[in-house]
Length: 197
Figure 1 (cartoon, rainbow, N blue to C red):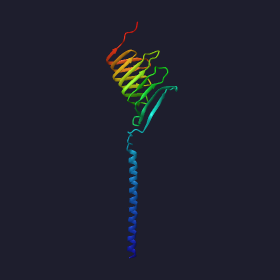
Figure 2: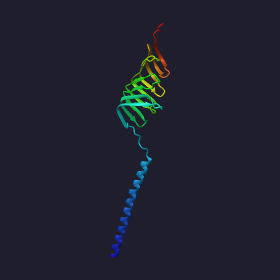
Figure 3: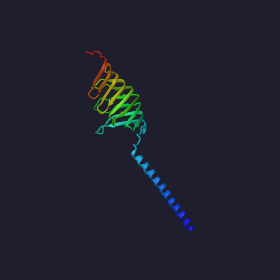
Figure 4: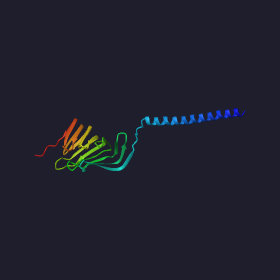
């Protein structure tokens, strides 16, 4: 009887040890599979803005350390997906003393490509006051692409331009503020006052 009881006890202990080993092995296997799955699956891209700044003023410097232009606005939001910035009520001022000063404003803007492209949307106005070298300049459009590194503005939408006393309307425009080259591409209408004698 003692032998039978010992045999049952031995079998019970052997089954208990096997169940404990099986449970621990299953737990380990689940942990390994979960860890490998997390490492293999791509991390979901963050699509929501990661920070914002209210009432900001940003100054872009030249390689020589001189201020080139500044962008200010009511709200700046950073988009981590493409490293771009959305701006509410942007105002852009050129600060390069070697070029005619230009001031731009719009309802909203987007800065991308490491600050080399500034898209301005909605009631876009650009103003350059009269200087000794150039007439006053005013541009109005619903969209404008500003390339601040090249001091160039362009649009493919209708634009109204006042240059001195002359007025131009057309669709599609390119303007280089440094060289003062202006091109309008289609449906161009202009009013040029006579030159004084």
